[in-house]
Length: 259
Length: 325
Ligand SMILES: Cc1cc2nc3c(=O)[nH]c(=O)nc-3n(C[C@H](O)[C@H](O)[C@H](O)COP(=O)(O)OP(=O)(O)OC[C@H]3O[C@@H](n4cnc5c(N)ncnc54)[C@H](O)[C@@H]3O)c2cc1C
Ligand SMILES: Nc1ncnc2c1ncn2[C@@H]1O[C@H](COP(=O)(O)O)[C@@H](O)[C@H]1O
Image (tube, rainbow over all chains, first blue to last red; front, top):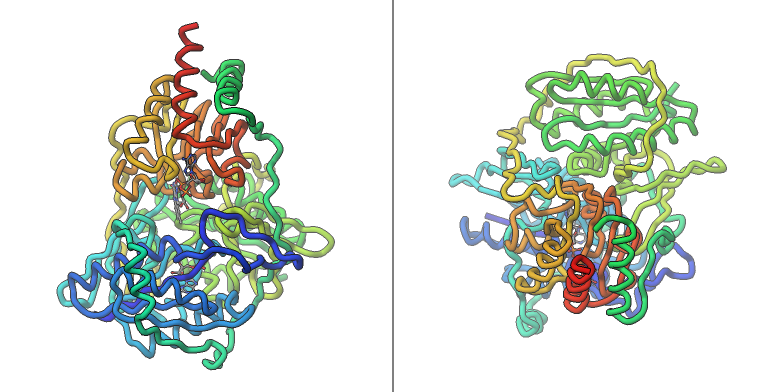
């Protein structure tokens, strides 16, 4: 089976990015990055499917030069190939353009199964995988928590999440795309050593600009302004030494009558 | 008249998040009022006449496809119905709840229409001729004000309990037939109800929840000890279910259980929208987190910045001594 899995390089979870002076983007300098969390689950699922059905797993990232680090993580976990679509400047933030580029790449590779994460932690869109499937004209199931490919590799039974703990099962024809939900399979820890070693693996690189892809998007979404969320002002922050803060907290809760 | 009406896709049925309909209709009404258009609601499901009648109080028109074969969510069928409606009434926007189903449909529709998707919106602003959508980015640490030019707007709207839509009354309820889409490469098999085991966290008056910040599994005992001291139950955020410490019946949030206790104590939980969805209606919210910028503090009533490993035992002891005093 030919399996493709997407991995995006996103700012790390620990810090709040600094908003640029233009207020339309963030300061990239000094920011730490990591592989997007649900994409790690997608990689694990891809590797599991390879284990059961044989074949190859190709990881693809689209982004600036630094995004190669996401492929190092994928290599450390065990994928067979890494492809980097290099974007310069603001091109990297145009989802439609990225989707079109991704479609070119996967068509060239050939595929039976494509995995993406359910959403990227930076733009929180949850669009890329579904838009890619639409572009390719293949079926897509989102928020997937289980994939069972049939022995003849022509269909798969896929479980997706609905809300509130409900799930739904679908049968789907291959090739298809699944957007992978958190928890589909345990994410194994990758040691720093393994990631360092993965840096010497060959990454196939192509430039988005050279691919000459036109965005087919009819309407354009643009960021008018970024801001830091305001504290609604209702949260009483208990500063001071822990023991004192705790006393105030408990006294407060008793006063409110909640404990 | 085209491009002034707003279509809202409401939910009703197994695994569907009916509670999201209110904020969705409020946002739709705001957009429609700005354009001088109507709000048309699409509802697809089984045995949903009552919901349709109820929604009719708040919108101009409800199109309802009510049939046993719609009992299970079928993305392609609903998508087909949406596309037909879009062609018929040429709306300026199609809105969905920011739920599993809403996210799925909105992404599919925007891809079909070739337009952008504005997901996860918590507010819509119409002023001085411009419409902006407000949404989080970067795990909720930054807000973006988004403008859209041209094309049909496809957006998902976060659930917010505070905003009930205005009663309009007199909305027409029109029964429609929707066909299964021709493309049968995706075939719904069955809906699986959640297995509820152990305590029902939705029924508790006090919920003490631990998140990834708990670190090691042994540390969760600190969460449980506090829950016991305050006479509440313990619960968790999704990552602790994903790594197998708990079953999903302990999980608070969009894909887990929605709770509304009089006291919710969030320990080592960052406050992602999907978690907040399931607890923001709680009476008093206390947040304990070592990161002063954690989004959870924005919806909390009382916050302490610090290490939960240090703070939880202190709180538990203090509660116990207050109780015996
Ligand atoms: C479709 C969908 C549905 C989802 N459904 C749900 C859902 O139902 N429920 C849910 O919870 N999530 C859900 N999620 C996942 C959600 O997006 C977040 O990933 C998740 O809520 C994060 O959990 P967390 O806050 O425990 O972990 P993190 O975001 O990793 O936060 C951990 C926090 O702990 C703090 N911390 C670390 N160490 C300490 C310490 N020693 N003392 C104090 N604080 C500390 C950190 O500062 C951080 O803020 C869903 C996601 C998607 C895409
Ligand atoms: N630039 C990118 N490079 C690689 N994968 C991406 C990229 N953008 C989105 N994806 C994939 O699509 C998923 C959803 O992204 P989004 O629609 O941006 O929320 C992510 O979890 C990734 O798997």
